[in-house]
Every structure is written in C-alpha cells, then in structure tokens.
Length: 421
Image (cartoon, rainbow, N blue to C red):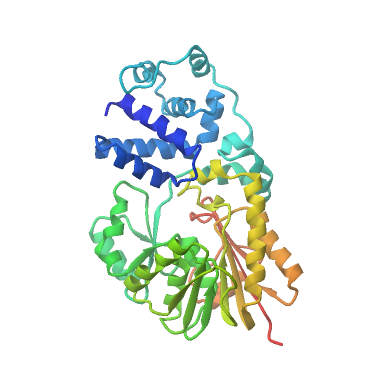
C-alpha cells in the first residue's frame, strides 16, 4: 500500500470507530482479514495511526476545528510536522484521500489557540469537573499520561514459577524486563513492537505468567486472601483477579467467579487449567448471587474505564454523562449484593479501573451510609500486613493509582470489613 492508501484506510477505519462499540483492536483485526492485500507493515502503520488518533482525538479535532475522521487524520500529520507533504498525500489519486478543500487549507495555515483544559489533556469536556476533583492542579499532566502508550505488565504465577527466574529468562531472550515497583510478582516490559508474541511464549503456555497491570495485582493483594478461605469474585469478567487470588490462597479453598457475561467468564476455564488452578468455580449470573457467607467478596465493578485509556483509548470518546450515571447505579447495586454475602469478620473489596471519585470514593461513602455496620480498612495497613517491601501510594484509606503518579493504569481499591457481632 502507498502512504496515501494507508491514510485513506485509517480514515475509513476511524469513521467506523466513531459509530460502533466494537473494541479498536478487534475492528482492526477484522479490517485486516477483509483486506488481505495489506501487508504486515501496512497493518502495523495503519494500527499505529488509528491508536494515535484515538489517544489525541480531542486535540486533533480542535486543531482543525472539525471532528471528522479526515480532519483528525490531517491534524495527526500536522503534529508530526508533515505540513509540506499534505498535498502529495491528499492528491485524489486512486486509493488516496481527495485533495484538501479550501476550508481545510485555511485550517492548516491558521492554527487555533491552545484550547481549554479538555483539549490540552485530550479528554471529554464533560469530565473536567470530575478530573479536576481527582487530580487538582495536575489534571493536564495526569490526562496526558493517560494518553501515552502503556507498557506490558505480567503477573508471575507463584503456583508455577518464581519472578527472579522468569526475569532471568526474559532478559536472556532480549526483553527489557524489570521487576515492578509495588507488586512482588510483577514484571514490566516497555511498550515495543512485537510484544504480542508474548501471548505465544513458552512460559505463558506453561502457566508461568498472566498479563495483568501492576495496579490490578496490588488490588488483589489488598484482599488479603489466605489458604482455605471461601471467596466470591462478583464481577469476574475473564477471571484475572480470581487467578491472582487463587495463587495467594496457594490453591486451597474455594473461589466462586461470577459474571453476567458467560462468554467472557467461560474463557477463565482454560486459563485456570494453564495456571494450575482447580479451586475456581464459575457461575453465570442470571438471578441471585451464590449463597454465602464468604470470607472475601471482591467487586471489580464495571466502570468508565478512564484508568485504562492508555490501553483502550477508544473508551474516552465513547463515554457519555448518561452512561456514567448508569454505571454509578450499577456499582451501588453490586455493592449491596456483595454486602449480603460477607460473613461476620469478612472483607468486601471494591475496585475499579477508573480515576473518577464519583465511581470510587463516593461509592465507598454511599455504601457505608447504607450499610453502617461495615468499617473501612486502611489500605496502607493491609499492604503492610501483606508483607510488601515497598510502601504503597495511599489517598486516605484507599489505594489510588495513575500513570503519572504510579506509572500504572489508573486504578482504585478500597476494603471494608464486617465486624463480628
């Protein structure tokens, strides 16, 4: 494909992304299957630009004062200093974008002012009050960090492997692997081409590691799961937290992993086999939650996904105020369901991959108002009890993470205990 043809493909793909709920990586995969003539370099270049557009959609649209896919592509080229190449790339030849219009030429030659905070930080304008509340004067720095490329984080499965040994093997193979700062089982590899092959690595196939951001690993450790306990993972998804909890329980006890999405949940079965885990039982939620009581109820709640914009940047342009309100209601309902399942003396762990206080601290406060018997546990104390060597960034009693501060995904975790009567 010519450079112009690649740009036209990007325009068409980005148009689709603005009108579908399909994940960007899946849409790109489907596009590649339908366009077999595109070589590996073409696919890589197209995917790279699509994700760049998603990360900087708001500032690119501001640059051209136009939200169309074509305008955003033009702005991406301007950001790369390619103003002199526009007439060649947009020449209207076969498979190429049509020439710039008079208005587009004017926009290219006349950049607007710096723009509001939402433009500077590349986030939806309606989220500015929430993000200012979360980050204060660091709002732009935090938002820009959420628009960067994420590294690959691995969780070494202590049931089958040792972190030092996995690190040694990864480095011997040329990976720039380092131990994570907070999680004692984490390994971080900086973003680079070709890392998708890790999903076919012999160590992965042997169950030595799983893909999991360091912040999520920390949240699982804060649960304090112990061998022999009974655990409910109430919104388990594909089961990443369940697998981490099973490792902490040393494969002794019981974990009931629940989700309304049976397709995602059943993906946990082969993952558990690979990890050497047999204590997880899956349960598709079509009615009441499994009967308690449980020593730990873990609620990794569906949320806005603002904390994972680095990995799924399409989420930032799809989030609406209405959807956020729906999510808050769902989070409250899940917490209420969870409360009924906790045994006296047990813990309720609430976590989200969100940086928004209304999905995090506000939900904790609202839950405690509805369930005054529950007491908030200090995440700092729980972390020390877990025997961690590195102190954890704590906001009040809660664990809060962000790319700017902790160099992880944005994440929140808080723990309640139900005192014994």
